[in-house]
Length: 214
Image 1 (cartoon, helix red, strand yellow):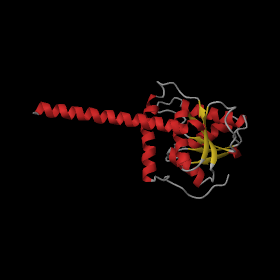
Image 2: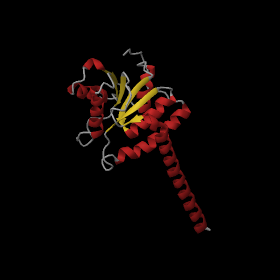
Image 3: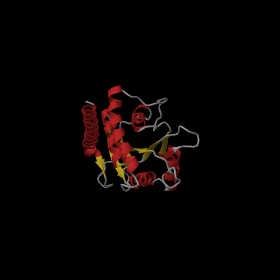
Image 4: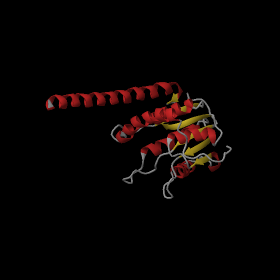
């Protein structure tokens, strides 16, 4: 009897595991499918938007090395600016700790590349992608803009923006190799599930606040 019960439990656990994998796979494909018509790899093809949302990430990794996700997003923003595809940037990132400021780090690097300081606005409350996207509408008054990040991130951000009736497109920054980005991509699968849970629960940004005119 014990062997039979153990066998049934094992089969049950395997079925649950397979169901979870299937759900992750389906959600991953849905997010990509829903956003594919709004994502651009080529600078010459992307439409003009006055404002771009540059999604933040840390400048350095925990081991002290430069974060390539950060570097490539800065390069993508510069490409858009030089091509006249975006004139103003909202840089949105995490500033939950005094010594950690994604948005300011990105602004400093954009300025170093020649983008004027008065063309860059900081959003220090971009703790999550949902916060960054929704605050563009609720705080910065933008309903039409370009999102700048890596493709996997753009896909999720576009899905969120479209859910909230924003007219957005995404410009893909250069991605990293699969070995470098393995942990990030693993987290992304779970983040995509979280998006739909947020939709179901009506999740709001952690902070809103006063309107900022740009």
